[in-house]
Image (cartoon, rainbow, N blue to C red; front, side):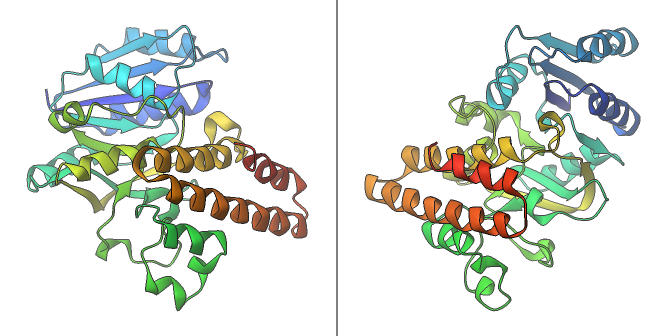
Length: 300
C-alpha cells in the first residue's frame, strides 16, 4: 500500500465531513487507506463516521473512549497503518487536488528527505506561511519573536525565524519543521524515531518530530507544487486559547527535553517577556479575552 492517511478528530463534525469527502474525491492513482482516530467526540461525529464506514471500504475508524490528544492519536493510527508513507492530516484540512500523490512522487525522488509538507492555505485560500513551516526555536529566534523583531523588514533577514511571516518566499527556504496539519512521513522513518512524543497533548508535536527526524541526518521538505486548505482551530471554535497555551507549553517541554537548564531558564524568561508584550498589545487593541489567554501562559 502506498499511503495511510491518518486523521485525528475531536468534536469537529462539519469540517470532518468536508475533510473526508475531499480525501476520497481527490486521492487518486494511489493505493491508500484512511484511518480516523476519534478522540471520544460528543458532537455527532460518531454518527458521521459510522455512515462513512458503510460508504467507503478503505476507511477504518478507531473509536477512543477518551481524548488522547493529537500525538497519541496519531501514534495509535500509525500502529494500524499499512502504507509505505503516512499522511498526517488535520480534520480541518481540505484537499483541493491530488496532493497525496504529488507529495509521494516528490519524496520518491528525494531519498534524503524524511518528511515533507506543501503550501498551506488559510480559509480565504491565501498562502499562510506561519501555518506551513519554520525553523527550530533557538533563543535568538524566540527573542526576536518575543519583541516582534521578526516582523521588521531589515532585522528579520538577519536570522532564521521560528515562525515564517507573510511576504516570505517559501520556495527558496530550507526548513527545519513543517506543519502536522498536512505532513507526509516515510513509515520507516516514523518507526525509527518512535512516532510522536505523547507527552505533548496538542501543539509542538510536529516540531519535536521533525527535530528527531533531522537528528537521523534526513531533511525536512517543503513542496510548493501542491496545496491544501487548513481552516484552522476547528476543534477550538476558532478561539486561539488552545494554540497559544499549547505553543508556550510545547516550547518549554522542547527545551526541557533537548537543552541544558540554563537554556531552559533563559527560554522561560523570554517567554514571560513575550507574554507580557502580547498582553499589552491585545489590551491596546481592545481584545481583553486574548490578553487573558497570554496572562495564563505565565503559569504554564
